[in-house]
Each structure stands twice: as structure tokens, then as C-alpha cells.
Image (cartoon, rainbow, N blue to C red; front, side, top):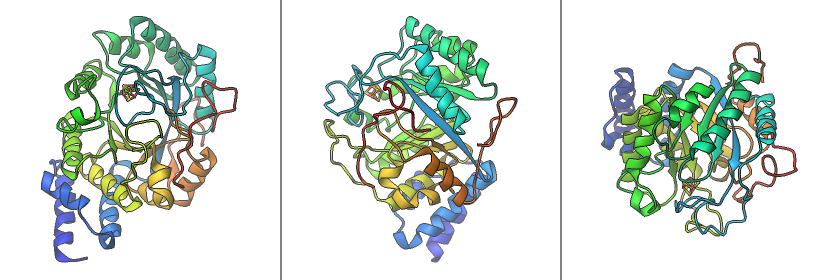
Amino acid sequence: MDHDLAALLDDLLSATTREEAPSADSLLAVLATDDDDLLDVVAAAARVRRRWFGRRVKLAYLVNLKSGLCPEDCTYCSQRLGSAAEILRYTWLRAPEALGAARAGIDAGASRVCLVASGRGPTERDVTRVCGVVARIVEEHPGVEVCACLGLLSDGQAERLRDAGAHAYNHNLNASEDAYPEICTTHDHADRVATVRRVQGAGLSACSGLIAGAGETPEQLVDVLLELRALDPDSAPVNFLVPFEGTPLAGRHELTPQRCLRILAAARFALPRAELRLGAGRELHLRALQPLALHVASSLFLGDYLTAEGQDAAADLAMIADAGLEVEEVPGPAGRTASSRVVPRRRGAGTDVAPNA
Ligand code: SF4
């Protein structure tokens, strides 16, 4: 390892030990490292990961309660206004179907269930509906964390979800304040920050992350990482663009597996204590380097994503075991151990086909 790289990684490791924010320049330097230096960068980020998370990997399972038909226009999203992507489109799942999907994920090893609905934000009736599902999951599966992801929240809605038993709420920043107008015109970055703050104010665990590969500059990527650090979420999904045909970013493939690892390492240095979750697009962009990414991230979404299929859940579990890592168990009575083609989801919630779990 050359002297400059060693000094950079030492500085970043010292900053995490002192719980100080890394400088934007140092994160930019991580993103600019050569492929020849990749394993040194990953090894340094892996030290931070091991310090806070040991060898555990948390499995989260997505249940798409309402798919497509969104009035918002986020460019990267297959569910956006006017999307011609060949995704499943359905309105709210009925409670038994949502519960069945959640059960499948939990039975496969997930210790967190993420109840997601497309849209700008929930109505009070929507919150009532989701609260009912949250309460049933918590009752049936003590120890399993339920996270809701329903868009921008209004006054009192986070409290209602908390009182129903939700543990967390996800609302990704996705992009930096500077980049935001390029990816969405129907709401702004401040709206997203306000919802994350609302969630924290209600005492829910905040989950907020980003999407990479959507045309952002390295500077914008570093900005969103530091904006996330300022928000201090407990968990942070790192999504990699899934460039669906029928969306404005169709055909965009600007990520390599090596770049994804550098992005994850920068995220780990910026958010040393956050549960970094490998999100959508990991199979597409990390490909055979996914196991290496698990030494930087500490969590992944098991099985399928909201609108795209993931690799088989069994392959996820085998990958974790082969990497020498361990699936985090659900505490309490419910506890137990547990290519480059975009494939639209055609199984699980909203279909008659068995879920990938
Ligand atoms: S990211 Fe959310 S708000 Fe934006 S278009 Fe997709 S579902 Fe709608």
C-alpha cells in the first residue's frame, strides 16, 4: 500500500474511533482510489464494520403493500408517475396477503419486515390500514422489527405507527440537496429531511439511505453521505440504480462492482455506526463481489425488491455463510436461526406466485 493511501485510511479510521465526521475530501479520495487499492480500502472499512457489528448480518424483508401508480416523478423509480416499466401494479394488499408475505420473509430468516407503499405520503386511512398490519406482525412475531415506508409523513402519523408497534420508519434522502432537483420535481430534499426528523421526534428508529448510479457526481455522493451523517439514522440502505426500461434512467449502467465497493466503503466511513443495508441493484452491479460488500455493509434485503427480483433467498443465506458471517437471530420466543439483467418482480406480494423467501 502506498504512503498516501495508508495515510488516508489511517486518518479515516482514527476519525471513526474519535467519532468525528470524515472530511468531504477524504471521502472523495476513497471514491477516487484505484482498483489496485480496492482490497486495502475494503479491509479498512471492514474494520469499522466489525467494530460495531461483528460478524452479524441483519436480514430485512420487503413487502410492497402498494405497487406502482405513484404521483411523484423520481427519475430512478419504476413506480413513478408515467412509468412505462413492466412492473406489477396493484393497490393496497389486503391484510391477510400482507401478513402472509411478511411471514414468508420471517420464516426465511428476516428479523426486520419493511412494509412499503408507493405514493407521496399516506392518508390517515392508509396509516390505519398499515397500523393494523404492524400490530398483527408484532403480535405474531415478537422480536421482529417492523419498519414502515409510506412516503412523506404528516403530523401525528409517525406517533400512530409507533403506537401500533412499529420499530422504525424508512425514508431515504436518496440524493444530496444539490442533486435533488435533477431527480425529482414533485417534492424536494427538505421534505425528505423533515420526514426523517419527524420519525426521530416520535422515537422511531430512523432508516434513511441513498441511491447510487443515478447520474450523481462524486461530490454529490459525498454530500448526501454527509447529509445522512448529520441526520444520524440508525440504518441506511445503499441502493444501486436498477435502470428499468420505461423510466428516464433506462439503460444507465455507470456502476462497476469495484465502484460499488468504494461507495460502500465511503458510506461506512461516513456512517460508522449505522446499519448499512445492501439495497436494490446489488446483484446487478456488485455481481460476484457481493460477498466482499458484506464485509462493509452489515445488512441486506433478503429475496426480492419492491419491483425487481433479487437472487434466490437461499443464495443470499449461502453467500452469508460462505463469507464467514452470521445471520442475526430474532430475539425472544420467535427466535430461530435462520447478471446484468433487470428482472421485474412477478412473485410474492400482489401475485398468486409463492414469495422468494
Ligand atoms: S421513490 Fe417513492 S415517491 Fe418517488 S416515485 Fe418512487 S414510489 Fe413515488
